[in-house]
Image (cartoon, rainbow, N blue to C red):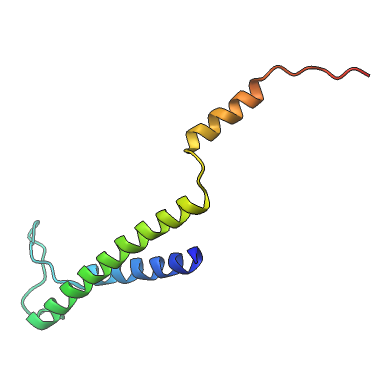
Amino acid sequence: MENIILIIHVVIAVLLIGSVLLQRSEGGALGIGAGNDSLMSSRSAGNFLTKFTTIMAILFIATSISLTIIHKKTNPSGSIIDKIEKLEKQDNSPKIPKSK
């Protein structure tokens, strides 16, 4: 189940990146911007891309949260810092030589 959601998550991430890059720049912050004759300049294409981006962002957040919940249920361990401290305590414990 986790692998299926992870694959869906990656596909949504790629679609989200693509939809953001296809959108027309509204700002022109540095004087660089698309002119009026750009490829996706019509209002309907802009509305579609805006809605598509919003839906992809919501799905991306939902899959992120679901992956976190699934991982937490399958691996209910503590943080990585706790594991490192536990390993360090095991390594620093005095070793008693075995007698023959």
